[in-house]
Image (cartoon, rainbow, N blue to C red; front, side):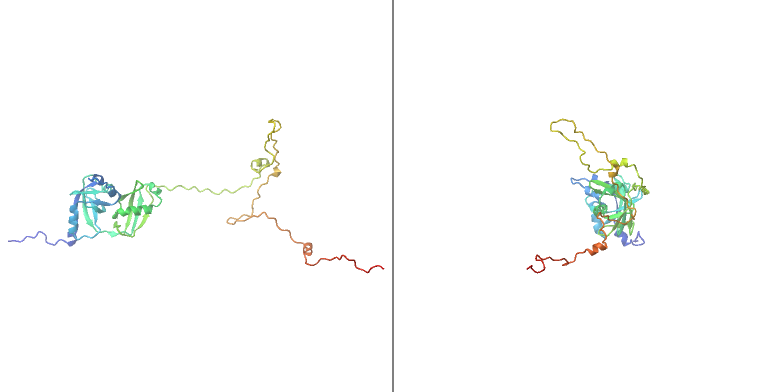
Length: 309
């Protein structure tokens, strides 16, 4: 008898421990069952059949389980994690945003392969709408949303849900590789300007130099808002209207006081002006008339001199 060996070289161990199969993919809304699986749409993980778990358990693969999804018809690929193994045989369920990145339709074929990815250290995102700027703390919102993701791929457009609104972000850059794992990692996050965002235009106006114009004093009456006594109208006890019309006193322009500008003003210096009057200088007469203690003269009730005989 003759022995026949089909392979001249043994199969490398790396390929023996590699999971690779093809499934028909559907969106999560097509998943049968009474439970609502909207949580799958909020992350970057898929649902695979139980046979995949049986096959993966026999292989010496590293954890966590990460997979590369490829659409051979459009030459599109992305990376993801696995959430559960409860799908029907030959079928896997993907989030809607992942099917859009792969240009897949309902029932399309997708190649699923197990991969090992490096841990992420940096990632940069670009919001696809200026509405993302309405979020008070976008980094905290993104950090909370990325807990449902297992990995990131440069070029993907991921979708996050916040306040019952879906925001799409494009992965612009990832380090140290184009596809990275974000499970238990310390990653720096940066944002690019949103798509379609325009910075508000700032109009710079040259400061106008103040000009001093001496106007007509007759036009200053509108500026004087001080109280003027006895300018109102009165009422009589007998109810008659005669002689109660107010007789306004004309304002003398000399009574109106205008502020005096500070011609010594310098930019950056604050001057406090007080209304206290300066104290008069002391003269020589004031110095001579200063108070000296015990300097007065005394007087006696008795008159000096002897008695008359």
